[in-house]
Length: 624
Image: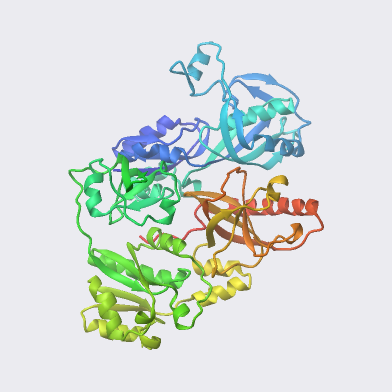
């Protein structure tokens, strides 16, 4: 049994106790992905079987906590389980005082861990030295806190002698929330300790999709093992590369092998040292590897961790059995219905699927002008391969020859050579000269050649027919809610970061600027809550699309992305910007001070919106 279990830990048992429970439940080797103190609750990812070799890729992910701080009582462990060192009057502490101090804890800081902790000194945990009465000296070390906010403040009262507050923290590995509580008490001059802690997220694992021990045992007794998350799915945040069968034979033995060319954009934009999920042609996880590049040779895949049993792993050729044909601009819910049918066909025939699409857009050749595109090629390829169950993308050059082909000629030159048994198209599919051949023509002619054609009917939703044309209309009207609902994911723009006027840095809101490509459909000018993806890492932020009228203006509208609590130099890097919620239209302000005040309000509103939704809400659900 191999995979991950997201445990919702209760207060009391240690992380080791939870691991022991999971060993008995799974009858497999287990380990936790980042310990939780006994009195802490919440997300504790458990690696099972071969997944124990992948713990680092979970532990290094973003962590989120909700902590309660009690002011006026200081303990030696910085939490409620420690020995009280000092007790003082803290009735003067207010929400405003806490609010003013919290920004000091944000960003790259130096943090001193609690002396009563599992940190080792001379090979022994510090808490053991403390128990023996030894003096220990803990040195500050770097810590990265992405976001910290005051959620709730409870002043001192007749029934509550000590004021308390609740904070939310998003941070990297190695941050101690206990130290934040202790240091905040020191700054206020009254002492403090962490009175409660709940972890709500570790990388891809979140509280909403976790299980208590009782729930896990009950499911196991009923033969329901759906709580076990496959390794490949748990590591979906790591970009994937699919190896050819010839390369797989080398990779499963730990040898380097040629990478498939051309490299997908999400792979080629990464540094060579970045980890990759290495898959075979059927999407099975072979292990974790990296790219090795040299100027004189093609890139190689180098394996760091091989996760398959060589003696049990079977390499087999996967025939192409089904294909879908179309432009698929936007890959909306209508297209998804088509891709779901394509996935069923390939499962039925135990093979691979392909999408046949065209470049340039056929209307640019037929009419001399194509519609504005909702998705560029790199985003379309990513959605098809990573989320919509497609194995290959075949892009045909749409030229005069293809445009003027006969229906029979199109089928015999394009579909028949693929050897597929199934073809899936939409109800409005047309092809051949003047587009006179319809989906039903394709169905009749393919039947004569032993190929089955499935036609997906028109599909509608709350905003009308799912179509690229309809979505473009809603986008031009500024109705982002309708656009995202019809797409099934958030509208996105991808591009390279260009130099801006650097004004954002001077007012405390540095931005990454991207110019939409020519022919890209664009949203209404204004401010949005959104997400920014760079090299496989997702950041929350505020997005402005427009010409910046307050500070002199731009000739062309551009996208400005402010990443919450980050100081990244993204110039020249490719990023993908997802538009989640429209906050307000673009407008001219009377000056910089008014602009700064409004940006601060936009920041708060965007954080509130993004904090309430799933870390993957900007992406479509995987077809599987």
